[in-house]
Length: 454
Ligand SMILES: *Cc1c(COP(=O)(O)O)cnc(C)c1O
Image (cartoon, rainbow, N blue to C red; front, side, top):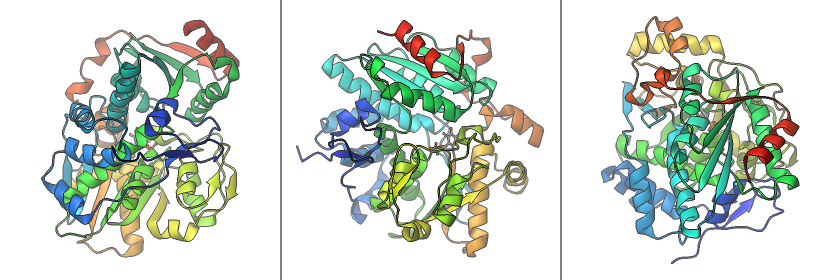
């Protein structure tokens, strides 16, 4: 097998490891995030061939570049085929503008794309090595259910999900709390950033060294790699001639999705510009404009709740990709190439009023049904097009990251009807919920871990 690509830590105080090791560890021992030492290039020929391939075949090719030598090709092909058994619709909206719906998976958000392949890869290695893992995950609403669903019922994995009690919708909560079995759920009296901080503290806690902890948040490189794929997929279906450039608009919170798009671009996808659209948690647009990074503490509560992130973990990766260095606390030690970042990324903040207005106007003008996250992406794209006087025939793809039925309260208030329920969300109300409440307090969390897991 060819030489494997190794993964280094953004803090640079850990020796590079293989994909398998990075996947099972989650966070590097020096608290940095793993990044690939080389970014494999796809040839124009390979990209052209995607046009005739199914989603799972493109996923096999793209992920396989990072996984060379880490598992037999036929095994990766089988895992990919099993993971991606649902449609990925590209909805034509107007001229050359499209919405890619990443909401057709079993938990109705784009988090399924990463969770399903990552879950299968982790399970693959654990089975091979008869190992066990405890997956700790903080969720802003959708990661929790995607991860819980992807690992549900697996013998070698326990899953513990922390969610901010007041910041997920009842339907999102039910998607996690009605599973049971190897899945435990805790409601934290706090925000997503607090949940994420509790998880990170557990990883760094030497008293918990005996626990086989891993992370399923987008700090895990195993989640980022599958998120490269749908950019190639969209392009393979929509481009009219070889080398045609595309603009992608990505509603962003913790910036895992943005990292996927950037890696796709570095692998050779002809991207004209990436639009990174945040809600009122605008620390990134401000950073890009000024070069100074200031986390938002506490994060602002917006209706696109899965993006209420005041200190996105993956910024450390972004800054690393542009030649800088940021530590786990958000302190920048080496500055990144901001000029290049500005050429490649257009960052924009969309407030709740604009989000609601976009949901209404998209539906009235185009019959396009968006939920709050997808509306932030679409509004961001429209702002970009206006500011740059973008031509109508420029290929643009905006990501819809969740199904509107996950946010029925908001849609009903704006559009006056209930979004149709996909079959994956049916029957949740009738199931029994099981979860704990906990204060935002590390001591209690540690005691819980000691008591329930050995
Ligand atoms: C998680 C999530 C996002 C943000 O994705 P990041 O990779 O964290 O930037 C956007 N929309 C929805 C619906 C999500 O669940």
